[in-house]
Image: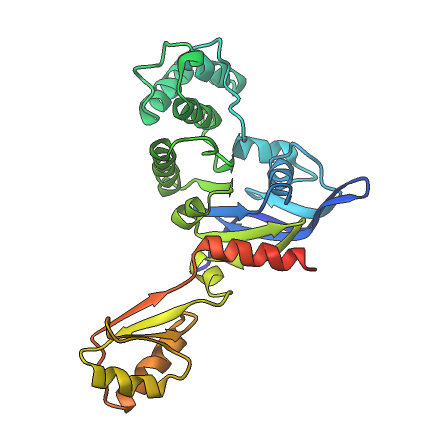
Length: 311
């Protein structure tokens, strides 16, 4: 099935004097998906979001967002997107309702349509009880929910979320994850930057790792986990004799007599698994249990950014 791109970028570059922030990156984000951009502080994540959302001009490169060319039709891009930055853009001297009504006015919604949209968002983000309360009394999680709700007033097709859960407690973070999943289920495309690798693992359809202004890897979470060593297939057998026979088939394995298991190095791919099973089948050895273990995204992130530092 052919997928449509919500965002494409080719050769994107940005520098400040002698400091190169983005060094020719290419991106392709599918409609109705979550794309996560990972990277250490200073890698260029926020600069990327600012360029794609028309807040900053690139030095070079071609970008299309929601079918609009960034260079020739920035207004078209702006009508299709919503942006939630690293820091809440809410007005603490206003209530939740007043913040949302202000956004409705900025989007030139009629009075009746504005009231309807505000009520809808207050309900969606579980802010009805606090709607008339000053935002200065809100918790961090409530402020982030309101901030995201404000970016959705204009019903955007694409949402840029720049580290949206920074500083939130685990419960508030998971509430935000649920909201993001609901948005995507409704057809919205989410471009997410985060330093929480579990967040990317939980939410993202595709992940890119940015370091020193360059993309050092792209793919699904599982594809990225296969890029570094440490993956293995864990085989459990019913007795020591079968375990010993299997060990002969797989040199370089790690054996555990107490658990009756072998750890066979593997990238976790289908071909690797098929090769393991074919060997066992040819030797007529029965395996009681098979499980695949891959490095987590923390391992991937550290390995990829350390390699980049060595260049």
